[in-house]
Length: 247
Image (tube, rainbow, N blue to C red; front, side, top):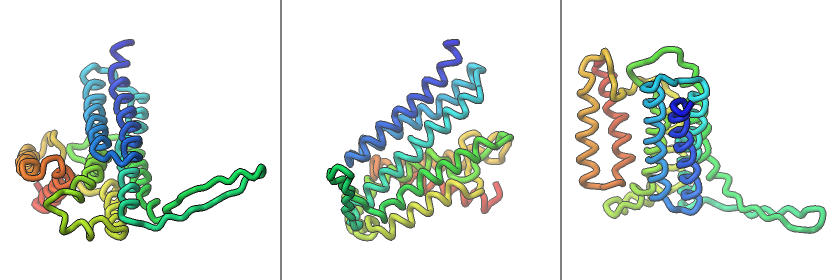
């Protein structure tokens, strides 16, 4: 019984980290929010790994995993994007409702910023489709939700990096952020092949992961944690090259 519960504890830890990431994003604590999502992705990787190693894979584990991922890899990056919309200066509307007893209820709404919540909606669709897969593939179909989450979570660090201040007015503006949201949803749900770090049975299985790790090391050396989004973009580019070369 204890052995069966170990993977579930990791999955629930992922969910807890996702809740903390949403809370930190609400407070504009972008670094803390990113740290919680990274920790959640760590737990997300090991819950499935442990379930397989311990021989305790179950339908309950699959459902719990998707629910946890929806928060950590869907809602958390959606909240980060919403906060970026607010920082970009989108128009906020104050709406006042008068209740029956005369007590006013005031809402501050930023309708354009709601585009950020396309990200959790797209993540929900991807996770649901993933649960319906009946075969184990040596690659990913579309960008995995955790990878997309890291792409979005790294944007604040990239936007505010000292070496990129010139581009900030162009990056931190509503139209650009809407484009990011649409592209994120597209990448998660498109049927493009994206390599994983297993690659069993594929030619040059370790070549592209090795290139990615090398590029990641270089990017981190120059940009630190702010390189996270660039690393995911590099992963997308290498996956495209791999498909183009039919390797």
